[in-house]
Length: 97
Image 1 (cartoon, rainbow, N blue to C red):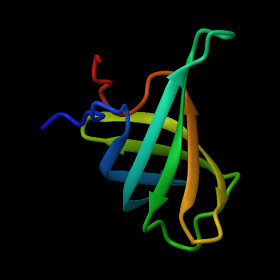
Image 2 (image 1 turned 180 degrees about the vertical axis):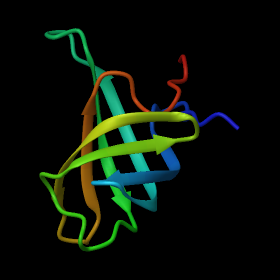
Image 3 (image 1 turned 30 degrees about the horizontal axis):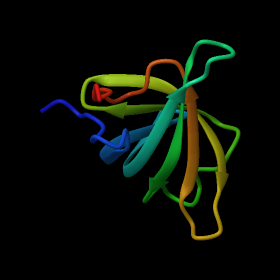
Image 4 (image 1 turned 90 degrees about the horizontal axis):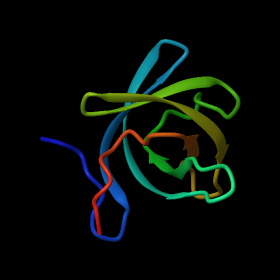
């Protein structure tokens, strides 16, 4: 099954987060937009279920289906989820609206 964003452009589904060679299953909710200034796609969202030991600033990869991309671990939000972001092609298919 191909992972795709819904008609609103939001992807909500299962993923795998790899931080320094340690892989953990997470659920992510991601959205993005094409930035007209730099011409690149910027996406961000939350990872639910990442272990507490996973903290901001470490290099990481996010995999959804057969797509794997570098992801920035931004911060832990007060409710405990891990905020993540990336620039370039997202790890999910974009739906043409």
